[in-house]
Length: 160
Image (cartoon, rainbow, N blue to C red):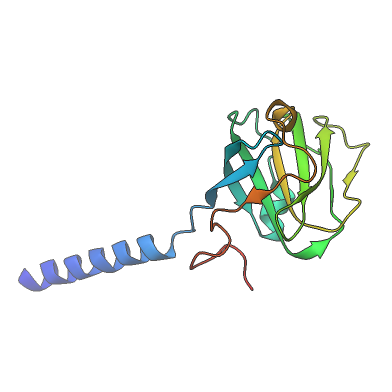
């Protein structure tokens, strides 16, 4: 009976260890945006840094909280394009360069697949938030994003 108990406890602790350390990272992060008025604004960003996460994005969701968004992370700067297939929420998108500077902001219409939102300048990041969020908070092209260590912590979301 003692042997069974020891085996059971060992198996339980191995399971617990694997469950904790093999679980996917919580891919959320707090980032800050600096407004034209000098205010520092917080966004609770979900991180989409793999092909499958970027392809899915915010599809099929009916809403996101006011100060939530999704940060799309790419391996390098390039011209990006997004569309609103299966996306139910009206969104704003900001294209951001490798230094965290917003190059462009677009308003995107839900479920409209007739339009693609192409970046004019190369970008390494894209941030989607609720429609009008950027204008309500005076975030404009040239505004800076602080990634708050999100992309450079150990076990970083970006594989470099």
